[in-house]
Image 1 (tube, rainbow over the protein chains, first blue to last red):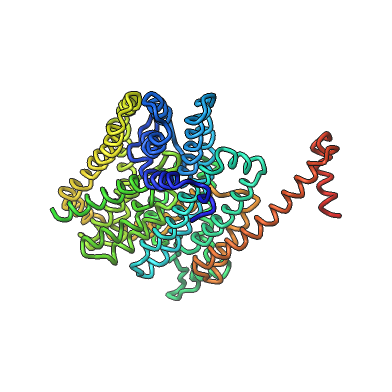
Image 2: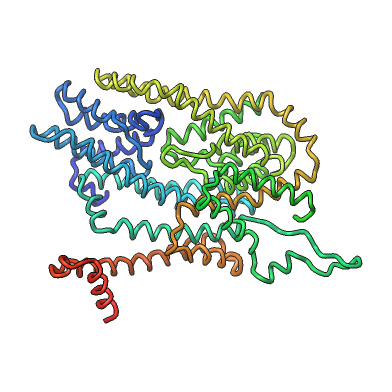
Length: 275
Length: 273
């Protein structure tokens, strides 16, 4: 029992559970024109059927909820909760402006997509994958399961409580976070963890060793890789990664060219016996 | 035949399955690799290649519907071919990259041409209040599009394995060595893509801290993650305090009327006093 749900009626709790399960399928039938509209509608149907008594009102709500919807999946239940609470108010009062429902829905999905994508895709997934990869390279069969758990447990908590939070607090909460500027603090903190992990993974996963040695009179007088290691361990992988980053960010080189270029250069260096 | 069927089922259940299960990451190489390995009788190779492909495809995620490749199909086929041909990353890599790009093209084609036209059908069903129809179409389209998508790995395995094998036999070992080297360097591209999302010059020092901790102190990644979280909490606390101080200052009516320059000065005064 969470603190958000303590004021809810039994029916509302049931609706919350239905929304949680149904919202998994948000992008099952994603279309270019309306993205997750059908999934949003599917998640809203229990509320619509509960709140509206007249057939005509139900149809209007169904048309309303079949509008364009696109946000990060972990954040979707929060938006659904807010939307559902507004549908409830709409069903109870005659002078409620039904158009405001879609306005709030649309204004929430943009910023939440940004936050959700950077926290869950950019940071959490990277941490989960990084840990799982290092386990897998050591031959640990549990790696994929650990990966899925590390990613999905936090996501499901956000999905479950986010929905209830959205429903309880209506549309005020996210606006308040924005006004107070707390979103920026949250994003910055998450980015710090993410960036540190990316740095750690650069060292852990990018491998590039020189094989080329200076030979004089049958004796090896200089081992290039050893020399580089004395200067700074992993200096080549670090430089290559920063170079790729620079090409991507400043030169707008496309990923596919970057991948192709890396392969070609690696093969050429192998042919020359350098690596 | 069994292999073709197994790989197609894996693609359907993971790449398609994650769309039904809220992008739960089932379709990532690190999951698909060992799964295909399990069905083809070589979990170890599947796990290793899955992990390598995950690092390469790490930067490739579906953000706001835009992506650069579809790693699921690519991983499934690359791992399957590598196991059947008893090759390692040198076999998997040259297959995985182009397959990822082709996979995305086909996925986009199905999305636009097969599912796309039904958007208006959904609308007219909503107008009529046809709830059952909406639910049926919602799940039906899912099944249809991923069935179509799974046909690709099925036929690729059925006809492609022998053809691919013959082509691969002709590749000299030195090239295979070069490709293995490339496989070890390519995570750099993935890392660079993540940096593009996360990089901010105020916090860029933490990237180098993370690198140093592993390169010299050999810290495991989970320890780096915990340490990063601790630092992030400390930074967030400090930011929050600064933020509250800033709010108190700007709440003063006098300051509210002054220009931003003097406001900054006052913040500094407060800060150093």
